[in-house]
Length: 278
Image (cartoon, rainbow, N blue to C red; front, side):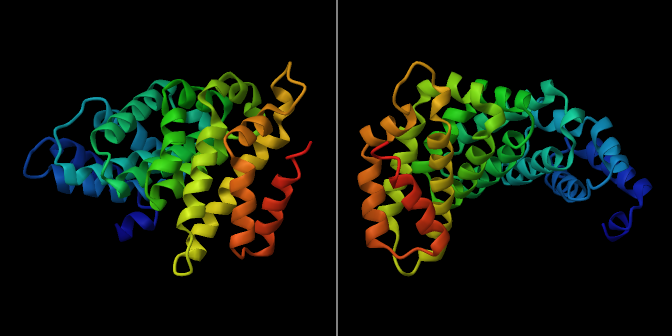
């Protein structure tokens, strides 16, 4: 791996081929997947990407459903995540993207207790939502948008952290038509539940980490408030109205009065409160 880090593409490619040739051998599958995950950390140039992609390793792992040990799952997610993170949008095949997302849904459904695994899945998904509009359309259509919204209030902070990053990628001005299309998912219901959950759990020993989460959710809510006019036919900002109906302003006001935040977070929160009477 040290040689690979020095741009030895020959060693990179042949190591990858060796792992793939042996991946279905029960006694070697774990070590092969571990090795591929290490190789995937070096997808830093076009040559490495081409070598990695043309072996079919991503499809082999997510489509053919190799019977690997459960201990391998974290490494498989790391491999696919690195692939999505290090590859230019225009070079990612949409069929493979759909297969990866279907694989992630299966993992989330089958391993709800695996918090570290789910954290890595949402990290990987944040690479999809930060991509182009087509990626975000595939993400929403697959059901992962709804799964992400559910995760921001029902999972551990490790998962919520990355799920909010995934939402921050999706909540982009270039995606407004898409955001309106999926308005029926009731974004504000989940964002309000997340806010209440964080408010109830902030304490002095965990303040710093929780406050990072508070900042991210403030940004998510603020984006929707700022773009409420895209929901045509409503005299009132529908996102603000939904937040109010779900008790969001009361939760927000109590949170700001009960806890001391830094200036940036305090300002974000106070700006949200200004929408209440608009």
